[in-house]
Amino acid sequence: MRVVYFFQVQIYFLLIICSACESTETDKTKTDKIIPESQTKISTKYSKDFLLGKFDYRTHSDFVLVSEKWSDKEIYLQKDTYIAFEKMANAAAKDGIPLVILSGTRNFLEQKVIWDRKWNNLKTTTKDEIGITLKILSSSSMPSTSRHHWGTDFDVNSVEDSYFLSAMGKKVYSWLSSNAHNYGFCQVYDDKKETKRTGYEVEKWHWSYMPISTLMLDAYINQIQYKDINGFQGDELASNSSVKIIENFILGISKSCRK
Image (cartoon, rainbow, N blue to C red; front, side, top):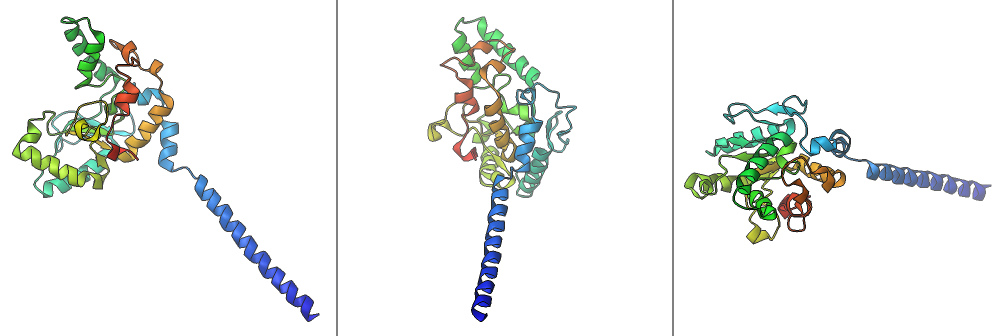
């Protein structure tokens, strides 16, 4: 009887242990399958029109007006981007570094005005539409492809290289390079000569809030096709082998800004 009882006890404890292991494994499996809330939000909330900039950010519930403390223009950003910017700007101010937002969210129509104006001006001097496209892309994005559509990116202090070569400009850029990542920001267009990336020229003034923009870039790549990029002068050239706006420009960001 004692032998039987001994084996019964052993079996009982083995069942308890196995049950615990199974429960742990099940919990682990459940945990592994959980999709981050932010990622779910991006995939369900942001439509093609949003990603392409075809919406009114002034009335969108996720966007807020930037305070006059940080800009003398009417500029909107996504709320989380703006909250992070304020934290960064206040910290920079304590170090004697002024940060002023010059440009924030631009929707499709606003980008189209910029693009079509440059296109029409260049068209008066040349018929080379590929050349015109690449010329404009040296300083401006195609409508439907700009990161400024998303409310996660902004330009600070100056959009001129000469400013960032000045004494104050060097201090601003040095501070941002050392500290911006602590607040979630990254310079997406770094020096192509050093990093060998494709796309836009270096922009020391352009900073992106990566916790959101990284997910939005993923959503863009998953949802947007070349046929969706249209409605402006020369739109058919977006997929041209000399341009490849998605592969060369939208994906042409700093490796340090990739997840």
